[in-house]
Image (cartoon, rainbow, N blue to C red):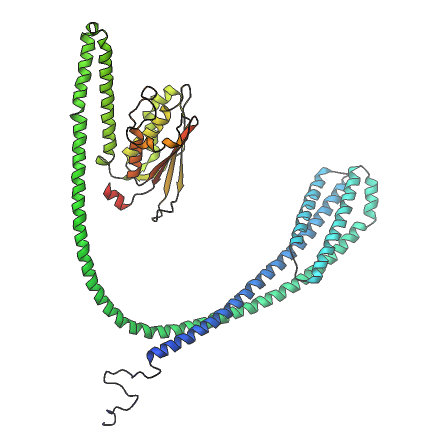
Amino acid sequence: MNRSLGGSPGSRTTHGSWSRGPYGTPTLYRINFGVLVVLLLINGAYSYQANRELIRNESRVQNTQNVLAAIKDTFSALQDAETGQRGYVITGGDPEYLEPYDSALQEIRSRREELRTLDSELDDQRASIEEFGDLIDQKMEELAEIVELVDQNHDDAAVRLIETDRGNRLMARIRDLVGTMETREYALMAEQRQQSRRSREQVRRSIHIATLAGLLFLTAAYYLVQRTIRTERENVEKLVVTNEELEAMIDERTMVLERYSKELQRSNRELQDFAFVASHDLQEPLRKIRAFGDRLKTKYSEQLGDGADYVNRMQAAAERMSRLINDLLAFSRVTTRAQPFEDTSLQEALEEVLEDLGQRIEETGARIRAATLPRIEADPTQMRQLLQNLIGNALKFVAPGTTPEVEITSTMTKRDDDTSGRDWYTIAIKDNGIGLDEQFVEKIFIPFQRLHSRDSYSGTGIGLAVCRRVVERHGGNIEVSSQPGVGTTFLVHLPSTQHPVSLEVN
């Protein structure tokens, strides 16, 4: 008993673990991993070399098969040409038999060109291929000579040339040469396949070695994992503390965001209140101005005299002011009265817009060409407003005496800057209108900015600003390309679906 409790070298320590000498556990791990890495490197190099040899052998086999196929196809086409020529001679020049002859000649030329590009590994075979080509040329000359005699109605001369048996001798030489070349290529292919089998066996052995090395690695890793688990437990405890601190920070940030959200809601309500004032309190005086103007013209038209012109100008100004207020309301309602996004058919929205614009289309004789538009997640009311503004502009901004032409297309794309992988659609609206200079492209999207006088083209200059705001609310963008006197193309880029974050903001 006393001996077993002694403190002799190599015995357990008071904590029950083996004492660490020069070959303790960490050192053994390093040695094991070092040996494993060396084995894997050697095996990897061996596998790489064997795999390269296998690929090279497979390529050689494929090349040999291609050479064989080219030889066989060339000889077969030559036989077809000879058959067609004989039929042509026997029938006294029936063109029906000349078609397979011409087709076979074309095939021979194609296969001979293929043979020139292929390179046999056998030196003797290269010489045989050259001889094969020479014999083919001689045979084709003999066939062509007989066909030419028949074409010239020298049937007797053609028969005499056939009876010389020159063609049969050429075919016999070609047939013997083809047999010799095929024998060589088959022997070469057998040797190549044997080498491929040896390479596969080498790769298989490499896989076995790699598997064994992997098992050794897993065994060593198991012991390392056990040791690491203890450290991970400590890290988890620290992580719990860190998470609690992060949760406290998140709660604080959430409170800040909620405060900002309430501020945004209050601002939105104020905008809605302003819209109500603009639509009611500002419109009411304008209606009275127009009403009193009508009464003045009705009851006192004779007494007004030249003053009638001032009344007309007053009413026109009131009408413009009313339209301006309505357009301003439309611009603000893009966000203040926006509807939730839902599955929306742009095709149905387009059909409704074209129906609403039917009278103007009929009056101008406009030609509308529209492709089928897709379905996307959007606000259907705003999609109709977007299409109506863009198509309405295409019908309005045309040179006098010009018939409007509008083309509407849709293409699906992907965007590199969209990591969600959503589909995107580009709706293009192209017209043959008056166009505009590229320097004014951005100006047309600014509210109440006009490029033409009111006398030339009606409007308040808010329509395209509404379009941009609608598109941006849907997470997209709008582009325009134009050339004066040629026309304008608007490109509307819209995602097929909306992100949840976008839904909440809007």
